[in-house]
Length: 218
Image 1: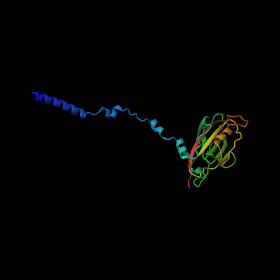
Image 2: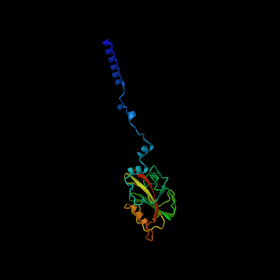
Image 3: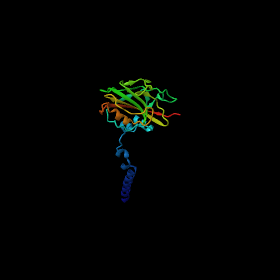
Image 4: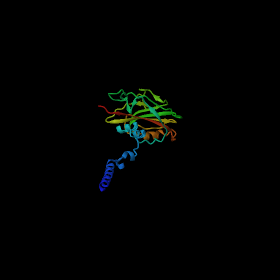
C-alpha cells in the first residue's frame, strides 16, 4: 500500500517542477513592466535644425550678435533667396549678373523712411535709402551713397549676405560706413542711425533681417 502513495507524491512533485520550468519569469517581461514613452511630433521636430541654424552652421561670416534684437521686427522677403541661399545671378562672379535682388518688407507704422544694408560679416555690399517698401530686381546701381550695390563675391568658403532694413521715424543723421569694403560694424551703424539729426535717440523704431548664403566657386 505504500508504493501507490509514494508514486502519487512523485507525480505531484514532477508536475509542479514542470509547471515552474515552463512558466515565464515576470521580471523578464519588460513589455508589461516598462512604460515606453512614445515620441511626439515635437520630439522629432526639435531635432531638425531650423533654417537659421543651417545658414549659421554653413557660414564663416554669419552675424550672430546684434545689439538691437529687442526692437520690434518685421519680415523681409526676396524671390532671390531659396532655402537660405542667394540666387547666383545677384553675384559679382562669372556665374552671376551683378544685379541687385528684389526685396520687399512690411510697412512700419510711423516710419518716415527705410535704410537698407547688405553686409557680409563686415563687408558692405549695398546701401539704400528709400521711402518705399519694395525694390525691383536690378533697381539699385552704383549711383552714389544711398543707391549702391555690388553683388557677393566670397573669396573662399560659404559667406552669409544679410540684408538689414531699418525703419526710421525721422530723417537720418550722420552714419559712417565704407561701401564695398571691410571694417563695417552693423551694431555701430544701427547706433548711429538711432540718433536723428537733432541728436535725439530712438530714431530706429523697428528692423527686419533676411539672410542668404553664397559659396565661393572656382
